[in-house]
Image (cartoon, rainbow, N blue to C red; front, side, top):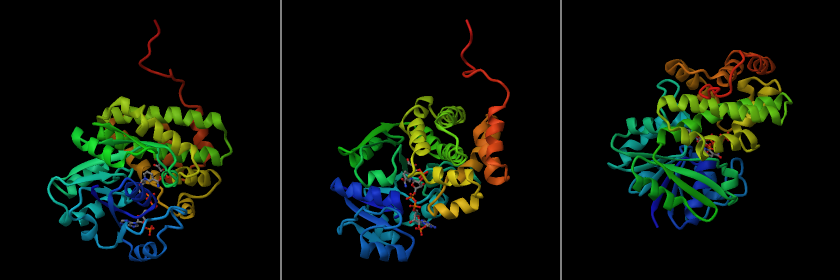
Amino acid sequence: MIQVGIIGAGSWGIALAVLLHNNGHKVTIWSIIEDEVNMLKVQREHKDKLPGVKIAEDILITNDLKEAASNKDMLVLAVPSPYTRSTSRMLREYVSENQLIVNVAKGIEESTLYTLTDIIEEEIPGVNAAVLSGPSHAEEVGREIPTTCVAGAKAKENAEFIQNTFMNEVFRVYTSPDILGIELGGALKNVIALAAGIADGLGYGDNTKAALITRGIAEISRLGTIMGGKKETFSGLTGIGDLIVTCASMHSRNRRAGILIGKGYTMDEAMKEVKMVVEGVYSAKAAIKLAEKYQVSLPIIEQVNEVLFFEKPAAEAVKELMIRDKKIEHSDLPWE
Ligand SMILES: NC(=O)C1=CN([C@@H]2O[C@H](COP(=O)(O)OP(=O)(O)OC[C@H]3O[C@@H](n4cnc5c(N)ncnc54)[C@H](OP(=O)(O)O)[C@@H]3O)[C@@H](O)[C@H]2O)C=CC1
Ligand SMILES: O=C(CO)COP(=O)(O)O
């Protein structure tokens, strides 16, 4: 048994708290919102965010960050990516040198273009920042539906420690040294999931969805490898795997927001309607900046930005993708 502090009591934080408790660990879960903590302490369930998933009485729920973060073998950072920096800053005074912090959020900071482990390491010098990512909707993990993820860490021992802590017969965890590739895949797939949702909202079909997923992973991989991620990672669970689940599932907030936009909602209206965090909206802007910085072409992601931020009608964006210059599918595949 180890002591784990889960920082963030949204749907993913709660699903992982329940999983780790089922694995026999001592779990404390923290939320910044006092009302949420009081509600969770009484109801032992988040009826809005993760209905039907009971939080056992011996999972400690707290609004006190010191109580949640001090003297823990592992911290799991499960706040939405726009809060990774502010939360890391608050955590700094409670964690010791070499503290293992497992980031489970998915995003890229628009102002700095940092990944989330970059932010954690900048705000809390001396920690071991790692990731856990993959195709894993909280709603299904909470119902113990078989799921696979990847634990990424600089040191093999840390990746294996995370693997051993999380893994059970319904949650299989692989290890990887490619933290950057894992984080880029997780953040950028949300932008393509918005596109897939938009296509659904426009009434397009499975052919369109397959095209967006396949050409979407090509964009993610093109940018991700130039930035230093490994190409194998983009064809693995945290790349194509997470992209498939997010583009296909009604659990995805990004896809659901996209569907509404495809039906004519504005970005703000769609985000309000979905209620929970729609991180693809932030990652879309960051991706465009990265494309400029690294001189990479990202046609789908560019069109998503046009629709989200420049009021381009969604159908027009799809048409522009279809009538782009003619291309060879794989530019590095020569004819004999
Ligand atoms: N849900 C999922 O299936 C999965 C999610 N993830 C990732 O996990 C991360 C968290 O997502 P998820 O749990 O679903 O999000 P939710 O929207 O369910 O919950 C987010 C939580 O953060 C709280 N919050 C609000 N403001 C702040 C703040 N200033 N500082 C810290 N926390 C704040 C929210 O409070 P309030 O309720 O008041 O808004 C809420 O409790 C995201 O990056 C997501 O991509 C990864 C894999 C699966
Ligand atoms: O990352 C996820 C599943 O792996 C969740 O995606 P959404 O944020 O779109 O709900």
